[in-house]
Image (cartoon, rainbow, N blue to C red):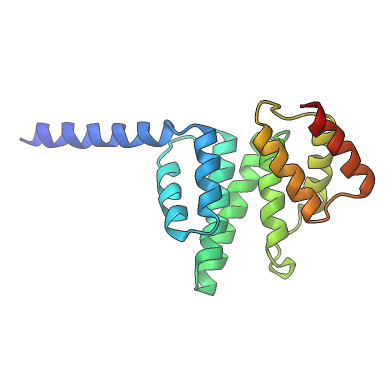
Length: 177
């Protein structure tokens, strides 16, 4: 009987781990977009992704971003700070592991720009902004993901993160895709 229970528990753990690891990055991106304004989706996706044993840097960046969303959805000031500390640690780890990923830098920039600066989570804004613009203009991104490239462009323009010259250069890149 004990053997059967151990076997079932082990099978459940492997199945759960495989489920989390089987998420494609496109699926994670889509679910993340839905989680931005949906706390239950945030919690569900976070639980799924946190089951991954050793996430690759991009997945780690999404897990970190979900921590920031938990802070957004939380009503407790203490919980908000705890989630943001967790976000900061994981996101910086993702950037350290993959410093040339425009998508990871975009996620960090987006969140740091959204958080009030007096909380101290905005120290990478200038660095990430510069990196994103240069990577975009120099096409240092996965051009197969046109949706993400368009999202980055739209965000940078809508938030006035680019000047007229940078915007024009980015538009030229978009048209070339």
